[in-house]
Length: 360
Image (cartoon, rainbow, N blue to C red):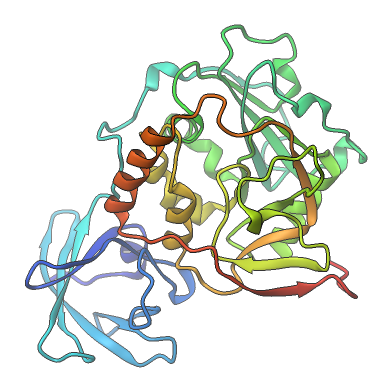
C-alpha cells in the first residue's frame, strides 16, 4: 500500500463510520495542530500520523482508534480501518469522500461572475486580510467612517454586487464582481471557486451590507482575531434600540473583551483561510443559509479558545431580519444541510477574557 502523508490527510475529507454502516461523521477533517473537525466527540478530539497509521485520540493523547491503510486509487488512499480501543467489538472505517454540498455541480454559476478585476493595482499582497461584502445600492459600506489613514488599513475590500446596475463608485474597492444571482454564501463560494486568487489572504470577514461599523473597527477586529489566534469569530452586536439582534448570545457583553462561544452568526463571520477553504462546499447551494452558522463551528472542531464573539468591537445591525425570509423554506434547507454534515447546533459560552487591563 502507498504511504499516506499529513498533507494528503488534511486536504481530503473523510467519512467516519462503523463497519456495520453507521455513519459517525459524514465529513471529518484532519486539521492543523492535530485538531479534528467535523465531529464533536470526546473520543475523537485529536489526531496523529505515526508509522504510516492514522491515530484518533482523546484530548489526553490516548489513542482511541488506530487506522491502517486498506484501499487506494491513483489519487491516493481511499479507505483506512481500525478496531476501536474504547469498544473492542467495533471496527471503524475512514473513507475518502467529497465534501457535502447542497449544490451538486462542480463550479456553480461560473457565468454569473463578471469581473471588473483588481481596480487598485499595487495593493494586493500588501494587506493580509480581505473583506468580502455582498452588496447592493442599499449597502452601508460607503458610510463607514474611516478614523484612520488608508495606508494603515490592514484589509482589502472585495464587493460582490447583486444590484442590476454597476455603481459609479465600483472602483473604490480593491475588487468588484457583478453577481446578480444567488444569495450571500452561495455567491461567495462561486466567486472564490472562479477567482481562487482571492484565497491568498490570511483572514476573511463576510459581513452583511446593513451593518454600521468603521474602517478603524474593522482594522481592530482583524488585529484581535490574529493576536488572539482565533479561527472563527464575529464582532458583538450593539444592544441599542436601533440595532436588531437575532440571537441574544451575540449581543455585546460590556464587561468582556471577548467571549469564547460555540456559535458565530451568519451576519458577520470572520474565518481563517484554512477554515474558509474547508467550509466553502457547505456555502454552495444555500439560500437563507439556515444552520450554516452551526456547521462551520462543527467543522472547526469547536476547539476552546479558537472561536469567539469579540465584545471589544461592536457593530449595529440596522435592518430587521425577515424582509425576504421564508421560515419554512429556511428550516427545510437547514435540516438538509444538518443531515449532510451530521453536526448539532450549540450556543454554549465557555468563558472569556475580561475587559479589565486587556490591552490587545
